[in-house]
Amino acid sequence: MSSPFVTLTADEAAALIQNGQTLGVSGFTPAGAAKVVPKALAVRARAEHEAGRPFKVAIVSGASTGDSLDGELARADAISWRTPYQSNKSLRESINAGRTRFFDMHLSHLPQQVRSGFLGDIDWTIVEACDVSPSGEITLTTSVGASPTFLRCAKKIIIELNRFHSPNLRGFHDIYEPQDPPYRQPIPILRPSDRIGTPTVKVDPSKIVGIVEGNQPDENAGFEPADETTERIGNNVAEFIAGELQAGRIPKEFLPIQSGVGNIANAVLGSLGSHPGIPPFEMYSEVIQDSVIKLIRSGKLKFATGTSLTIAKDVLLKFYEDLEFFRSRVLLRPQEITNNPEIVRRLGIITINTAIEVDIFGNINSTHIMGSNLMNGIGGSGDFTRNAHISIFTCPSSAKGGKISTIVPLVSHMDHSEHSVQVVVTEKGVADLRGKTPNERARLIIEKCAHPQFHQLLMHYYEMSKQGQTPQTLSRAFAFHEQFLRTGDMRQTPLG
Image (spheres, rainbow, N blue to C red):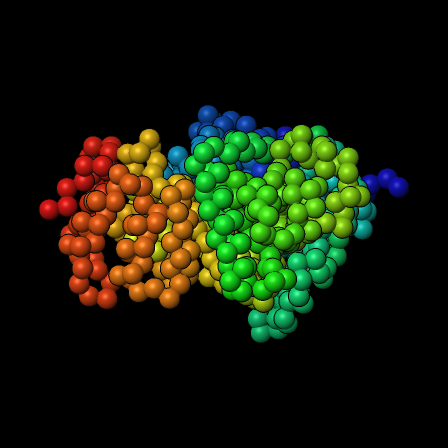
């Protein structure tokens, strides 16, 4: 059957988008992100700027995207504002320099805020698909993110039909949008493998302005091999969870795992998979990454559900070769469902996320460097952490060749408070903070998690501050950070 939709070139599609408009784009990590039209839009923006005309658009995505979207548009100075999460170097520089407005938010909140109009109109939605029917049924590619909501709310739609991805992905997606208050019903997920929605996103065909064809893999960079530090962190997490199971604080049936994305998360999942004290388990998470595919193939991971399939190109090609094997073992959902607090609490998920720095009371900074410069954003870590059965944060004990202690007197920016954080893990050890007072937490984190070269400094700070329910000396709380900004090295921090 011939398609009723107009086929556009990327340049023709980009020419339809006007200065000041808001774009909802597919992607959650580079997986499933729009690629072709954004690059053409960046070329157009540069031409408009050279002609002396303003050209910037607002970008709303599920989370981070690929360099063809966030990177190209940032380098073209074409993004007026951006939310909710990013991980691109060029965009980060633009945000920290004040050229691009950025506001952070929990990923589970985004779709409802879009539907409620909090972010204004969505003028265009650009989504990557592997198939689209004449009646407007869209089969997404390697992520769902917030695409269903963007497609529903958009005035007009452009579809990037990416031939790299197999149309046989139909059936790997479970598309479900809850009703908005006051009509919302309970989300009927009782197990990670429960299907509650449809395999495609259905839109009004009249909103589809055109199809842009392409053939490009996702721009996933892959992960570095585990080093000694990340291996130790992974082993410490696995030992702790195995101990909790043996002690009866995790039921014998075990509980689903959520893991953040990155090199540490990849190492942690590898350690969970190889630990003999941890039974075969399931994942209810945001991102399905390389180590997850390996665990599924080994049989240690029974089922994985997330909102994106963020895997290296070679891993994805092998995944496509074995689609029928994975069809009953992998499911992609909207981020509003993967990150939903109701489901996280119901399933009793064990959450494992990464910190930039941790203070001695268990507060977490996961977004900012030295308190002011944005790194990536909070992502979904807050959605999971606050509602977890056990919430774990990991980080190396030091950074920059030992010049930075990631354990500090007070975090320079707080994303997760001590009230949500139960366990802190570094390569040095595990601090179980449950049932501990601030004084007890401080001693435990210093003793178990801090790098030895910072023990004395941190204990000196704690001893000089030892008064009140939460021992803190406000005049010296940021002495570590101030010392680094002055000298580039925290190791000689004067505490007075």
